[in-house]
Image (tube, rainbow over all chains, first blue to last red; front, top):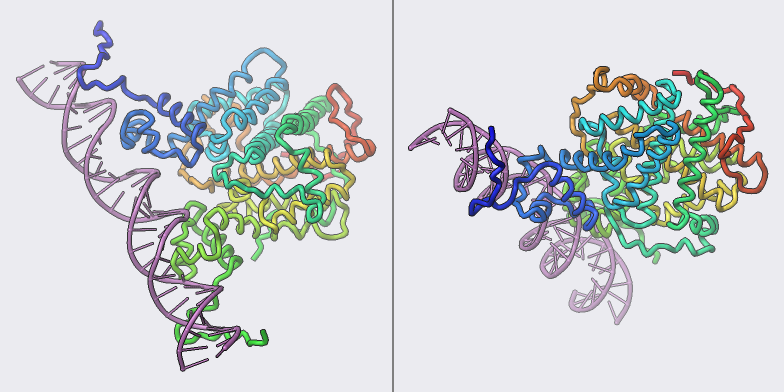
Length: 247
Length: 247
DNA sequence: GGTGTATACCTTACACCGTAAGGTCGTCGT
DNA sequence: ACGACGACCTTACGGTGTAAGGTATACACC
């Protein structure tokens, strides 16, 4: 039991063996540097000084590897949920951090909406997130609603972010910034300047303010669930939406 | 120029030639049936009775083809923007329709966030959408904000939709519905039932109600831009008219 | 008629992908 | 000493997007 580590290179002991965390970090670095669809098992292997199939000793497949990258994101996000601050403030920070991934890891952000919480690590995060909703005073139904609202917006805004920076998986050069052509697209050319990268922070903050305002009002309105005002059931909105089972 | 069509099969005139629209429709059908990552040029070609490389005569590449599928979505969505209804109601119907794509084409929905508006068709839609914001009374800055908010949520909710139905591009079987284990994940197991497919319509409507409430209040507050209340500016327009979306 | 040109499609080929199957070491417990 | 095992390698298969160039049909014009 007192055996030493003895991980010295015995002539062909190349390195200390890989592990999931190190592979996942290398994969994330590779995506950050080269883009998501330049992540291949072969390229990742060679970045680690190893053959591609070696990775399969640590991961069941590429999906499994992506889940591990999601875990890295979770570890980057979760700390802002922990603390003794006001629960609503912690939630706000959490969703800010989710969208922040789109800024710190723009080429890898897609992993977040593409994969689900299925690892123990990410499920623990999910648990903590929903617990914070509870601490803020929301019951289960309200938590579900506001979680979807805030998370949906955070993800959507993150994708818009990498879209505006043209860092999507398929970075087609898109010379077509002909939004500036006011002849054909007057409204687009008027609005798009407001959507430039420099303004995205403020636009995101505005959206989150709107959502968290509603959450705060919902809490102030008392313990019971509270709907936003629904003035009139306009026939136009109910006509072609929903699940039309078309065709 | 007065030549007749004369597109009769001259012994080896196989069929009337392909065109972008027909290829795109076939691609969408293939995705709907087989999933997004089962769409390959070869499979699409054979679905059309043609070799894969024939498609490259009509499309610059696969990305171009995906943009054409986005155009199909746009054509499915845009009609709800047209009409003489109240602009806000048309906008609401539009975002409902965007998320509706996740229901009518769950396996193809990813194309929507993955590609940008770059074709003339989709740019025309973008233009009409922003024009409707203008008609509703928003200036350019407000349009940018609320567009991002509503579109982000619609996209995010759509992805959650296909996530809950496990119809993502990578449909890993995920037996891990161990959310029901209240030991380890009490809050998750409490909230997740509310996020089941049967409730997603109501949850989405709730989110959209919240967003459009804010938009309506912003319009009622006058012509100038109005921030969501930071401290306690809750001048409630909260009427409880809507249907009881409880639980 | 012949001749040229354009369109629509096909053939071949290349480099790359994820991964199934099985082999080969070096290290360690006994 | 020896067997087991973990960590990694080798090979191979069926797929992918698409570059390059070939071919057959249709039409315009002389």
